[in-house]
View 1 (tube, rainbow, N blue to C red):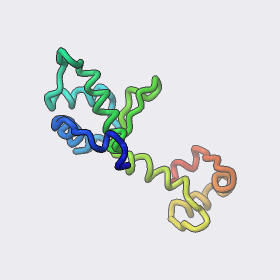
View 2 (cartoon, helix red, strand yellow):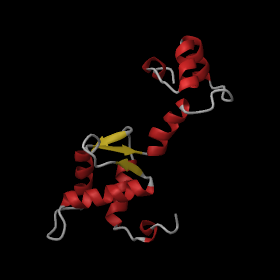
View 3 (cartoon, helix red, strand yellow):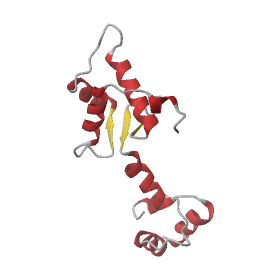
View 4 (spheres, one colour):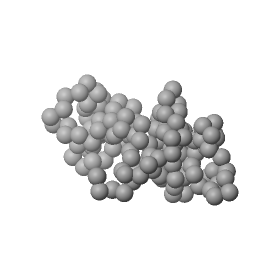
Length: 137
């Protein structure tokens, strides 16, 4: 990671202020791109002759995505969504499903096994997750 170019780059201070605002408070697990733009404006980012606000926001989101501070993907289906705290909002929940079910004895796994045994077996044996298990896991 030390060789990555973005690790050595300096960031505008206002970007750090934006990140702090994004990660503070109770915003839930995600916010819209429009909400991010409003926060950026509130922190002092604006359209300039050199670079429009939208371009600055995209650069900020790309950089913080690279750092793992948030998740943003500019593709058509995901471009309006920004995931805050990716480790706790995506990785932790996914690890409840993608784990070694034979060695972990968490209560939620016991409940899934007891309530929907065949669906739980399908998850463990074939990696097929049924939405009925999502309520438990």
